[in-house]
Structures are given as C-alpha cells and as structure tokens.
Amino acid sequence: MSSRSIPLFKTIYNKARLYSFQIPCKIWKMQCRYLRVNDDLKTRFTFHNSTHVCPQFCKTLQLVQPMSTHVQSIEGLFGKDSLQQYLNKLETEYKDCLNRIHAGGTEDVLRLLRRRVTDLAPVVSHIQQLRLKEQEFQDTEALLKDDDADIRDLAESERRLYKEAITDLKHKIISLLIPSEESDGSDLIMEVTAGVGGQEAMLFTAEMFDMYQNFASFRSWRFEILEYFPSEIGGLRHATASISGPASYKHMKYEGGVHRVQRVPKTEKQGRTHTSTMTVAILPLPTEINFTIHLKDLRIETKRASGAGGQHVNTTDSAVRILHIPTGVVSECQQERSQLKNKEKAMQVLRAKLYSMKLEEETSKRYNARKVQIGTKGRSEKIRTYNFPQDRVTDHRISETVHDIKGFMMGEELLDHMIQSLKEYEENESLLDILEENMQIDRNM
Image (cartoon, rainbow, N blue to C red):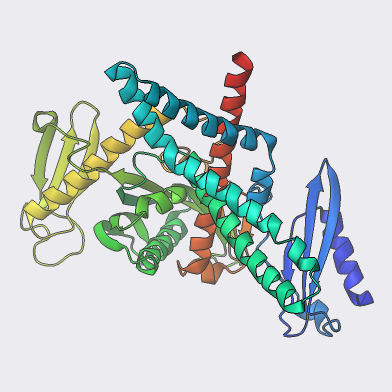
C-alpha cells in the first residue's frame, strides 16, 4: 500500500466510523470496513485484482454508501442458537399436530389442529429442504480431495449451486417466520406537506413529490394526483396522491415521517446553509369489503374551487369537503372539474385516513421501542436528512448513508436500495422479537 494512503486511513480510524470505499480504477479496487465488536474497533481490508496502487488514490477516492451495522447477515441469524431452537420447536409441533390428528378427537379440536398444520406446513417444508441441501453440501466436501481434476471441478460447481440454494431457503424461512401485516397488500394514499422553512421547505416538498412519482414509475405502479397546492415560486404546500400496484404499501410505508433538507436556498444571498423540513404520510388504502364508512356519519359540503385551474375555478361548486363526524377527520378534493369525481377521491382519502387511525390504534399496542419507525408510527420523528453541500442522504433509523444525492432524488435504484435496507432491518428486528418472546415462553413453562 502506498505511503500516501496511510494518513487517510489514520484519519478514518480516529473517527471510528464504518465506511465503504471504492476506487474508480479498472485494475485496483479496495474496500475498507470498520467493525465495532465488544467496544473494540477492528479493521478489515479486502483487496480485489490488486496489481498496484492507483497513482491518483488520494485525488480519486470517493466516499460511497456506508454499510448499516444494524442488519445481521442471514448466516449470522441462522448461527443463533435461539433461532435453531425455535425452528426445531416448530418441526416438533408440526409432527405432534399430525400425530394428534391421526389419533382422532372432537371436531373442534381437530379443526384447530388442521388449521395449525396448515400454518406450519410451508415453513416446516422449507426447513426440511434446508436440512437436505446442507447435508448435500457437506457430502460434496470429500469430492474436493479426489485425484481426478474433473471431479474436483464438478464438486466445486455443485457446492456453489448448493450454497445459493441454501441462502435462498434461509431467506424464505425468515420471510415465513415473520407474520405479514394486514395492510401490506394494500394500495396507498401519500400526503406530502411542507414543514419548517418557508419557501425553501415548499421547494423541497415539490422535489420530494417528483421523486416519489418517479419511483412509482420505476416500480411500474399507478400514480394519480388527488390534490396539489403549489406555492408562489414553484414549490409545493401540500399534495395528495394515490399509488397502486404490487406491494406498493409494503415498500412505501418506510417513507412515512419527517424528511430534513440542508442546503443553501436559491433565495439566500449570503451563502448560508439553511435547514428545512417536509412531512410524508403513507396511509394504507382499504377496500370497501374490509373497512366500511356509514353515510350517517358523514357531512358532505360543496364549494367553489380556489387557486389556478381554468374556467371552472370560482364558477362552479366542484370542490368537495367531507367531515367524518365521530372522529372529526376532514377530507377535501378540488382536483377534478367534476363534483362527482372530487367526491369519489375525497372519500378515497377519508377512508385511508380512518383506516390508518384504526391500524395505528391496533398496532401501537404490540409495537415496542425496538421497532423501526415506519408507516403510521413516528411521523414526528426525523427519519432522513438530505445534505446537499455534503452530497449526502442519511437515513437515521438504520444509520445508512448514500453519497449521491442527485441520483437518490431521481427515485430509482438508490431509493429502492434504501427501502430494501429498511425492510431487511424491520424483518431482522421482528424476528429478534419473535425469538425473544419464544425464549420467554420457554422460561415460564
């Protein structure tokens, strides 16, 4: 390693941070990771295709996304004794239920046993497949020492396939162990509102709204604007949109909360960096089947639309305002020229708001402090910072940073990767909760 790079590594080491570095050089790449283990800072260096140190090292070194220290690897999770004990317990319970069904009993008892077998069958099937693949992987180890080079190559190829299959099965088992939320299959209503920061906050809100519209297009979701209230200089005071598509709410629920921007506003003449905020609310959209609103609980009012919008503004009673009397929740819409269409969209937003309140009341009873702040929880919490001078986006829930703010605001791969990281973190925390509860049950027995 070049002596020119040593001061840089010392600086990073002293800051005691976790970084990943990439050198933009075709023949030289290095990754440097700092891990905290039992309060001792460890370093690990990995070199790939290293033939010589890039001569432009100090000039071209670019800080890229730090890796989250919160999410355990799949191997780390399966290395836990508590998880292995839990999987063994599920297998034992599954066999016990089958034996009791074969032994017979009352119809009510058999119905409960069959239902439990149905619930356990997918995860037990994957556990058994995992055991089989792990055994097959071990069986190929002896072939690696064979005298025939072709057999050794074949064994190595098979081991790679087995390893991929094992990893895939482990991910599927984790997904099956974590119960899905009722609203995960829903479409959603997204509300964005400018917060602290005046016109700068409104400009940032408009950029965020565009980012999510691009993200919906990136994920091939349908994006429909329900409300849009622009500011005087091209910003956005408040807007509402419906987003529909496969797993739309399951992904977008992680975006709910306060987003903070730090940059020099266009209106700032002295070059000072200002801090502004905007809020994103993600509301699952229920179907009329699983959530009903009674008409007697509504007060529907019509009024003339205001703002820019053409000849129908201030001339016809096309705007609709709906009040849900029991809760005081209000929904308005004036986006369409038709009063009927505005009423339909206002009802859609009202249904999402009331359904979100219902879910929040139910889930707040079982969510604890270890859960990631998502969806309907913690909207008052700052979840992400967009620092333009540092070209940095940091999600504070998982301490993950991306140093490409322009690419992130495009609403494509970088945003999708951040959401996937949040999803993995939540699954990790949910699984740890399940294992902790299981251990507590075992201790009390």
